[in-house]
Length: 299
Image (cartoon, rainbow, N blue to C red):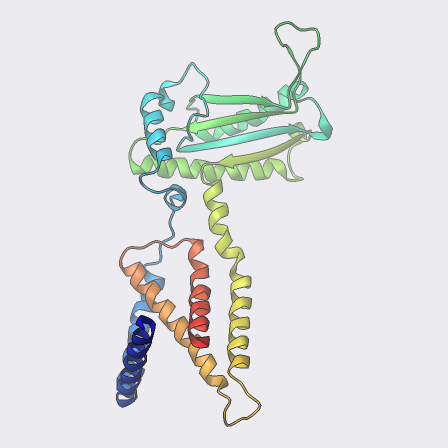
């Protein structure tokens, strides 16, 4: 009974809505177009990507943020000059080198090459020295050693932590250092690298590496988004077509997809006007909207 009442109410509401729209065609053709142009233009002028990856993957009240704040207050990086910095929490700005010996060699026998790479990294910092954490990977010990003497190591990891707890300008400098650090590692990893490091595989990781990879999904998904849009247009055209040309309504299907695109552009403009920030997970929202519209149309 309740379902029938709701169905009759919706049917009557849509009937009067359609009647009202048909009686005011100029208004509903011009006003939505003007609003789309106004709000759509703000997409280009106020577009801001979300740069804080933690905001995207963790809520503001998450336990991880509380624990990180506690760790930063009890174990600050700048005061850990004489102890190894633990992996208790992720630092703000850092650059990490992973030096791997080629052909399964022993990294301990390539100490000179490791120190040369390390010196080139330190030259990016204008001579200012701060704490450096290091670890060995792929370690094997001497068989008859009581104190677990290291005999072989596959790789070494060196982490450079940057101080960025001051003003915003200091964070900008730290970000620039990370960019130069990545450029240096790229040069050392290419075929044009100096002969002194030709026995090393050099890899890097910085504090913005995960953020960069996360936002690269938007760039990589451009082709898939365009192909999906073409397939949606094709499906809307075919599903609205019939053998009888008089009863077929292919342009109605295209108009439905166009309406959804206009609505999404307008919604994006309103979102950016209200200081919202873009992230690549928003790319799939239009297709969810199209799917819901298709379900509503079929029902």
